[in-house]
Image 1: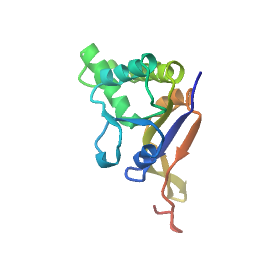
Image 2: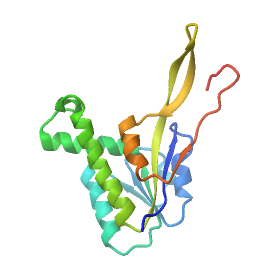
Image 3: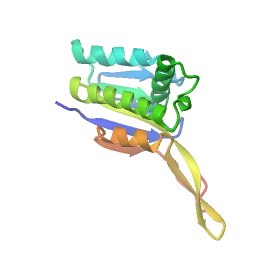
Length: 178
């Protein structure tokens, strides 16, 4: 039975990880450095295989984990890209040519997101970063906008599994500055 999946996005330091530590019976899959003191039940992921091993265990072993937080999806994608580059003998994911490397990473991510969604008994929070971009406003003016740092194709894949998306953001002042 599929469980709840949330995509929690916001800039670094706004409280995504702190939110995850408040979830009952949680396991945080740490993919990047951060405030380790907040993490009561962390597991450091250094490779894509580390991630797939955890997914395997969550799907096949008895456990008391109710919530798994992947902190962050941005870095997990990079671990997937590193795995594919190593398998293919590429220096970087762009070496595949015209987006095919990026597609391979997205398919790798989709396969594991599917497994987490349908083959485990856990709820999942995926955390991801946001960034501030400037968009044309007219008459040479621009406005600042907060957007996900993930590629749109990666967001589309995750939307297949996500129950809810939450933005933790900054409030703009009257000048539109954050």
